Image 1 (cartoon, rainbow, N blue to C red):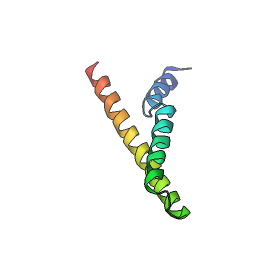
Image 2: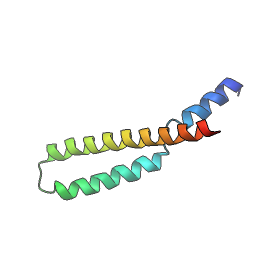
Image 3: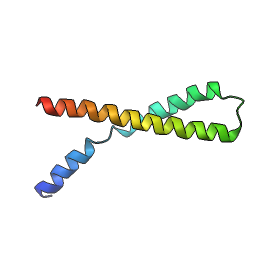
Image 4: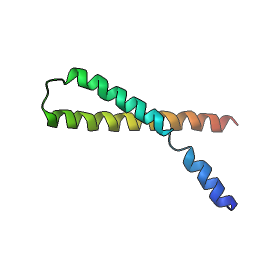
Length: 75
């Protein structure tokens, strides 16, 4: 690999949190959501699941990038 590809690979790896962080938090969020929406219709559950997944994805990504950017600036 040349230097450009190595640099791009390292930068792109740092843009996203590890997959298991997303997975654990989305499953946990859906578990909590299910406690509130036990008797809700299916379409309400689907909409709530999409909202939970999108919110968790956005928050984890923002926090991960802000933490990583902070560490990168200190170096």
